[in-house]
Length: 101
Image (cartoon, rainbow, N blue to C red):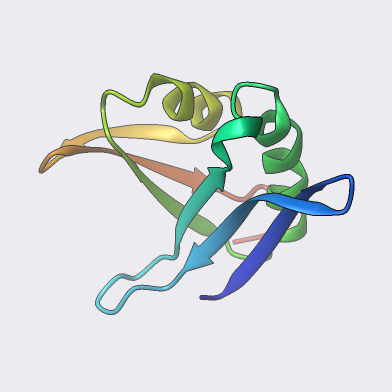
């Protein structure tokens, strides 16, 4: 894991956003999760932009199940670009505009 960002509510961890560098992959992959009792309440919508502003990686990849429409909307609303379906998953890329190429 490269970076871990914990999402807290009333001092309890309710979710997490992580960057993983998988072997054989040029760019890190983002993964995020909110505990079931806190889903669909806007926590990830609030925290993903904060996380993205804090990272230094120039490019990030996201891989999502095509049926996970909420995550797809979250990614596209945060400047991830859909690359299409590869295998069984939709693939997205994020280009960090906070960094110079």
